[in-house]
Length: 411
Ligand SMILES: [Mg+2]
View 1: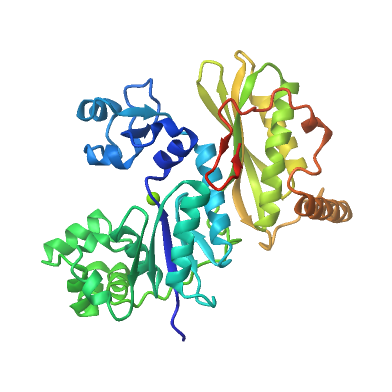
View 2 (view 1 turned 45 degrees about the horizontal axis):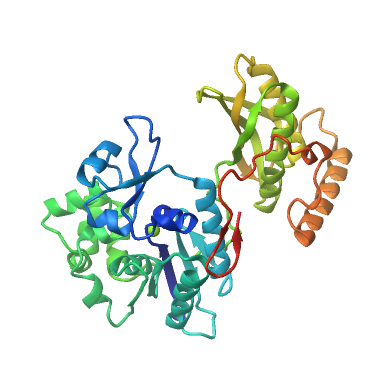
């Protein structure tokens, strides 16, 4: 097998950095993105470099963080923006390869083995492009396997590149504590420490059988990782096997007051879900809706289908039926989300429902294939049902429109 070239790119202080691009006034300040600011139990989800220097740690409560760093600026999370930034990052990665495997919103593995450019050259171009075009920074690990690439991206940051090669990995990796190794969690690290094993090099030099006896399969895996023998491939960017659900939600501009208004929002939300289901080759066997009322209280309802669903029309019908049946409208609705759940691959054999009409189903498939093609050609949303066209209650951007350093507008 020829040598592989794997990058792991990790966006630095991701949520906090996104907030700084969205609001430049936050730049060079101690910033923390915290869940539920009003509640006492809000915790720090992410922090800026300066906040980190002040000792702020992820998971701290808001009040602890404030005590530690009185001039800390606390902002609430805006995940819809972080996911937009994440897509833009992927867009930069896609210039080099379609073997892109995300690990959370802000990290990705890239396999660039087939590229004419050297992996270091690509890493350098990505690092620069992310900075110039998005105003974010990444740290990148360059290596011959995924585990070391990930480890490398942690070694130097922010805005840095670390190469871990077959030649230098013993020098660069083996002195590090076991816990730096992917999947070597707290529990495993404690066990290893109990055996007197503290570094990755010590894992590597033990007999494999010893680790297998003590830690089972996990022990073999860690031994292979430590010795640079991780052969796991980087998945293709279209690979979505890990998706257990596909959902979409919004906070409405004005509260929804009745079923008709809610239906429009449901239909709109389902557009994206149906498209994603087909693109990922998945079927939904159920749907869940989550409603947040005007007093910010949430409730969820679920329904299972007789036969699995792959299109937005059926999904919207089922989601609406569920809402109609379950929600009494004692309060107006402020936010609504629909999630296709219990997903299975579309090639899973299914027992046919006795009411199943094969020719109707075939026609529907042809129709949606045409819709997808149009949307692919003319952009998502080129074709949509008439109910969606009335967008009175659809979310507007109450927030800013930001021009990114590269000139692109983020809305
Ligand atoms: Mg990160």
